Amino acid sequence: MIEPIKIEYDLPLSAVDAFTCYALRIGDWWPAGFTAYGDDGLDTIVIEPQAGGRIYERSHDGSIYDWGIVRAFVHGIELVHSFHLAQDKQHPTEVAVRFNDTHGGCRMYFEHRDWSHENVHVRDKFLPAGGGWDVVLGAFVEFTRS
Image (cartoon, rainbow, N blue to C red; front, side):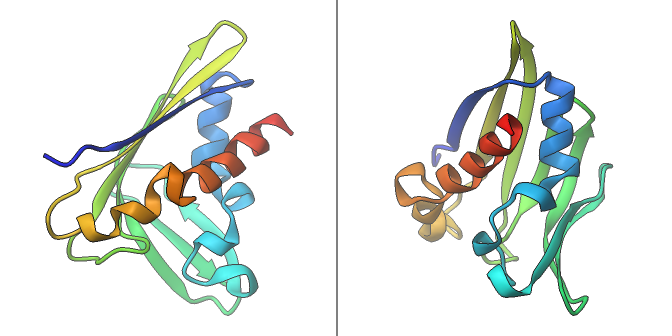
């Protein structure tokens, strides 16, 4: 078994507010440089808020690039979705994000999992040391603090 990438953050928002920022305002905080359309082409990113919903980015010209499918959407608590941005669509991974209230805010638990021999060759670019999730989730943390 290939270990998932796990990251945790303490945030200054309630679990419901942090979840809302993460899932429903993802287009406001996700760094454009970490998308298929990039800094010049990205218009927004959308997570359709229900199981079976799509996750996608839209370019300024209206083109759509799919990232995955929502597997679980429990508002204020958990989002789970398949993920194939920067990966082979035939061998997606899975991202799970959970928020739990704490005294003075919440704790975010992030896990990028379902690595296999078909997709492990791209895993390093997502590792915190590789600048992947640290940069992306760092932008989210900053967004929650502004």
